[in-house]
Image (cartoon, rainbow, N blue to C red):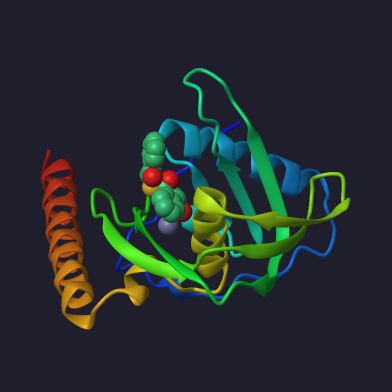
Amino acid sequence: MALRDILSIPDKRLRQVSKPVAKIDASIKKLVEDMFETMYEAPGIGLAAIQIGEPKRVVTMDLAKKEGEKEPQVFINPEIVEESDETSVHEEGCLSIPEYYEEVERPARVTVKYRDLDGKEHKEKATGLFAVCIQHEIDHLDGVLFIDHISKLKRDRVVKKFTKAAKQSAKDEAKDSRKAAAK
Ligand code: K1U
Ligand code: ZN
């Protein structure tokens, strides 16, 4: 297992459309292990493979209610096959947009089709936090972020803040490497 870095905005890789998994082999099992380690450490309740730079349609999730208990779930090639007309509003966060939370309106109920790590196909109805989280994660697989569902004004403000921070840390890193080279 390996703890992986989580990409944050404005990294362009987060806008990629991830590719379906053709074969669930050892490399996918290793990817899933790394995703769980990274998600639990963050901590988060969900993670899409692209958030650690792997453009594959793989999602991990754990919505366990009791502290100390684990309910790990893996979704390979997840697809929403039905959604309710009724919507609900839920506050969302994103490990790729740390410490930013905003209310998002989405279908209240969805039916999701996916394969598990053994390749077995499932079709499940999702409501509540499961519905919110699976829609958020499938959005990641399509290069969509939860800030795409909020007002342009709020989105521009948060993108600007993270772009400025990314430029500053690139400058700081360049300065540090010049210093190290001069020693
Ligand atoms: O995909 C991600 O970026 C993970 C994200 C999932 C998510 C959260 C809330 C609504 C929709 C999707 C997170 O896990 S953000 C962190 C978070 O919500 C959390 C962390 C620790 C305990 C409880 C929640
Ligand atoms: Zn996210």
